[in-house]
Length: 137
Image 1 (cartoon, rainbow, N blue to C red):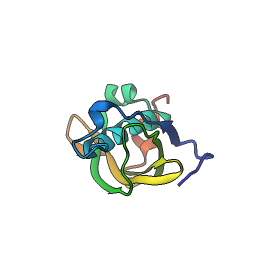
Image 2 (cartoon, rainbow, N blue to C red; image 1 turned 60 degrees about the vertical axis):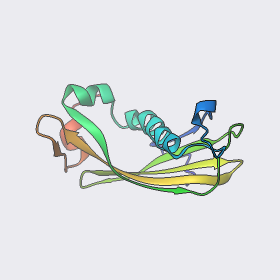
Image 3 (cartoon, rainbow, N blue to C red; image 1 turned 120 degrees about the vertical axis):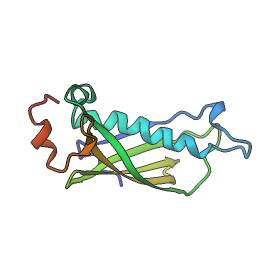
Image 4 (cartoon, rainbow, N blue to C red; image 1 turned 180 degrees about the vertical axis):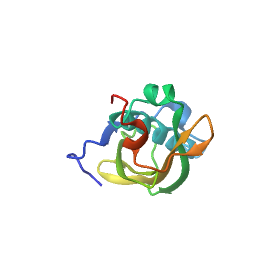
């Protein structure tokens, strides 16, 4: 999944906090979802500014998440998250994510997102430049 040449990708170090650990001694599943949100919040502005999208009543919404937990992440681990915007087609943005520990995959996910018009609650189906091309990135 590593694509360091793609301008619509990020790689960040993730923090494991004591409150992220569940009774079994590893990161709770909900933390991975929060990390997905954190990474997408860093990646999407490379495409368009969230503030400017909201100004024209548009918002990015997750419609599905397929996640796979492959290896436990524990308190003193140093996870690295990588997210890539794989495609934007017919109004659907496809994000792929890997979280690794020492270059071994601990978690991966595919998320489908859509842009919603907040005034009429409808999905925007055209090319992103059709509705937001007038916005500065």
